[in-house]
Amino acid sequence: MAAKRTVLTVLTSVGLLAATACTGSSDGSGASPAADRLTTTTAPGTSEVDRVTWALPYGEPTTLDPAKVGDYSPQTVMANLCDTLTRMNADFSLSPGLAEKVAWTDDRTLVLDLRSDVTFWDGSPMTPEDVVYSLERQRDPATQGLYGNYLADVTSIKATGAHQVTLRTKGYDQTLPKALSTSFGAVSEQSYTEKAGAAYGTAKGGLMCTGPFELGSWKSGGSLTIERNAAYWDTALKPRAKQVEFRFITNSNTLTSALLSGEVDGTYELPPTSATALAQSDVGAVHLGPSTQNVLLIPGNAESPAADRKLLDALSLVVDRQALIKNVFGGDATTLKSLVPPLTWSGDQAADEFDAAYKELPDAPEPDEAAAKKLVEEAGTPSRPLVAAIPAGDQRALQALTFIQAAAKTIGVEIEIKQLQPTEMSSLFYDPSARADLDLVLTFGYVTMPDPSSYVAEMVNPGGLFNWTNYSNPEASKLLDRARTSSDPAASATAYGEAQALFTPTIPAVYLATTHERMFMNKRLSGAPTSFAYMGMPWAAHLGGTDK
Image (cartoon, rainbow, N blue to C red; front, side):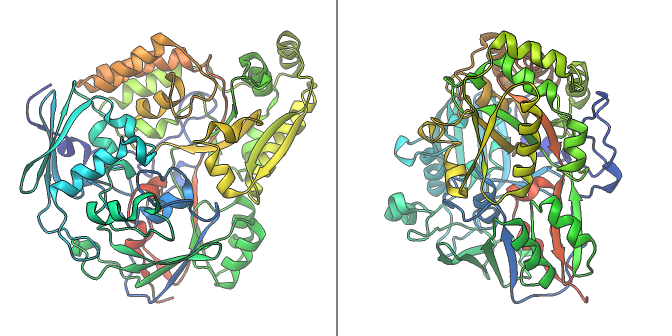
């Protein structure tokens, strides 16, 4: 790797989710029939607004602690509160954030040059010590954080100047600078965080970050409000909205009514049924954006009969994906051939290599009931119904799982649907005991940064956060590590493609679809990004009023 290569100089030109990007079709070409309908953002807002009301269809956040957020609701809110060291843009490109420059000076040294004009909400200046603390806290077992693995090969994190932090590593890691654009790279004030202790990020403990909004009131079970940070360091992104109130609305019918009446101004993750009703009104508009979301059916634990790949292949063969996409996702999705949607790498320098490897994968299967029944015979028909989990009140998930349930019944496999409250659903992703009695989980997952290997590693590598069945494929893990540590983009992409060919047909998972982002916004507002990048950027700071 060339010395002193500035990572953000490279990454800023990477438009991962361009409006015309492709998402992978059943013919393997990657073409999306809806590509011309996708946008990454809306027209800038032109005026200030006193108050915006936004829905969280996945319910109340379990935490806003950047080290622990890992679900839709907390990330939707936290992205507006806690700035990250590099910043995600609406097209999934990266630009400088709290660090104005991120550069490898050699293969084992990553230097972060910090901005000198950043303050926390309480007026205290952000220091290198705050940055070191925030990163080190990620891997402190006492934190119980989700992202400590990003630091697995980091040997030291030190303040090396008045506005500089240096990370020493065992070797080059091409994912590390990209991870700094996620909640892993968010910076919290050390003194405040230490004082709050385990309550940090909760309604009781509060939060202390540097973002364009600061945490206001949080009424557990009711709503959460964020207030404009008048002293925000990035004057080009000073929010036009003085206040944003988040309401926890998990019922699709209730959400539709609130949006139609104007009681709620907008939402991300708009259910298809709501989109249909809202399309007939003139209260606002439904926007479609590109996304890195993946819809998977995965076993809840290694002991379940559903962990048998033959049984999962049988379920895969009996599901009519085109009917699922049309009837459940309103046509706003495409088939998926592996764990990660192609949009994840579409802006990479080696996108052609990634695309070629993905194209070589077998196409999403057409329904074949006879072949599915044969696989069930080989695996053995489960002696009891398989318990499958979805979030309570999520009509899209319920419709999808009901669709799968009906298909499974035709091959003698019974599925029992279990609806979990949002907090229960969120916890099962990180707490093995919460999955002990679950055979299957219908997940609407997502990739948060422009790098497929780090996401996949959590499902493929033994001990990975989402490897719930103790799956092991040493060669695939070796290749994923090569993809992570290679400084040559083409070599990294090639290694990932080889790993993908190994884990795709063997890992316990049913690949169903990759959905488009669906957002609704009242016509009195504009400026919100429409792509899935909203999960990692201060999207509410872009909101403003219109003349409508």
